[in-house]
Image 1: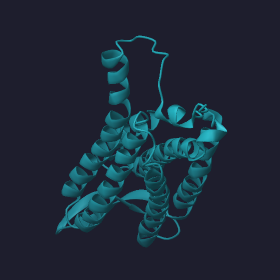
Image 2: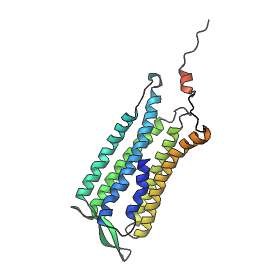
Image 3: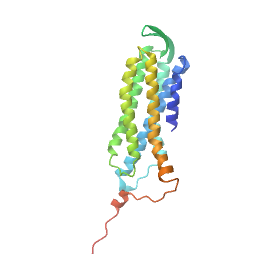
Image 4: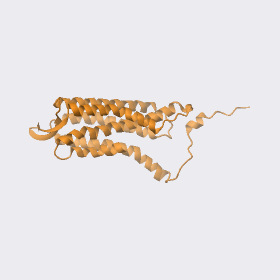
Length: 237
């Protein structure tokens, strides 16, 4: 939830006239919530897959263990952003776009313009790697009993983010050098869609089940197909 809220709020970093401080915060405000959301979806799916891979062991994975996995996924992202900020510091300069002068965010620091694209590519590649792991786990968890439909919603969210990234990133990179205004619109729509759609998929069904299906009742009884299958058959006389 926090990742989604921060991610949606990150669009404000691109509002108004570009400023070196705002440009410097853009990779952090968008990059960290993005990888945090992807990592959270992946580790939650991992817990479901691991539990049902060994159903007879009564395996329990605590929230603390999930948090450790999430932190492990976040550390490389933090390292990339820190090095990016130091080596290829984002800044704001006047650039010619489509025959007109625009004040835009660009790359400064030690490397200049190419460095920003290099670190952006590295960060996207790492995000894609984590997303791919989540997709693989989703495939492995596809046979989880239907009562645990959370894994289906997690899978839809992961595939949705992957499809959006494949479509929007190349289009944005192609449009941005020629028309920053159109690129700004595309980026804003993509950010709002990615985080809002994920938040809806993860929380609306949960709220619907609590307030509409169960009518806020404390439902304690749950008959699992898995438990039925694991019961030993009665001996025949």
